[in-house]
Amino acid sequence: MKIGISFAVAVLAAAMMVENSAARGRRKDEQLIETTCTNTPDYELCIKVIREDPSCATAPLQDLALIVVAEIKRKTEEIIVGIEKLQKTGPEEMQPALTKCRSYYNAVMVGNIPVAEQTTWGNPKFAENAMADTKNEAVMCEKAFGKIPTPSPFTKENKYIADVAAVARGIIRNLL
Image (cartoon, rainbow, N blue to C red):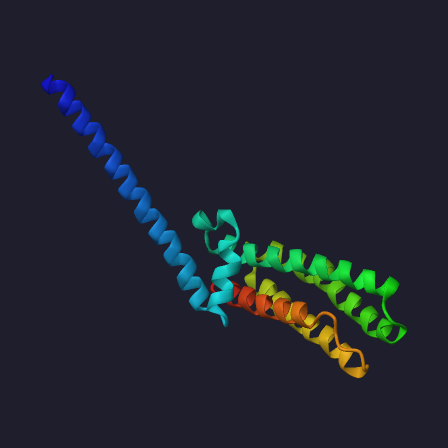
């Protein structure tokens, strides 16, 4: 009987140590996310984007950057679909601005995203420059609508891309 109780106590103690170790690991991972996001221009947005990805809890710094780049890619794909829809159905006066925006976001998809995805593990300077360019492409898309009387249908999306690209750039700078 005494051996059974001792064994049960040992098992319980081991389980508590494993749980305590896991909790420390979670705190350390959470600390990496918080420290990383503190070094970006928008802490709240950084936290929001990163925590939406279930793999963030154990992600190293490079993967945190890739999580944010993946969000830019996802949102850019949505914007391109919206642009293409408006190119088919939107007013004629909007078409030149839509064409410019399509070109800007195509550059993000074809150039900036692949560079950022590849170079976060290689030379992060290229990834940083790609995210700076992504922000500029979003700003240029918004400005394309400033030359026509119809307001931009993508103001919210352009701002979001510009803001998330700035966050990605901030994270990538930690890799330099």
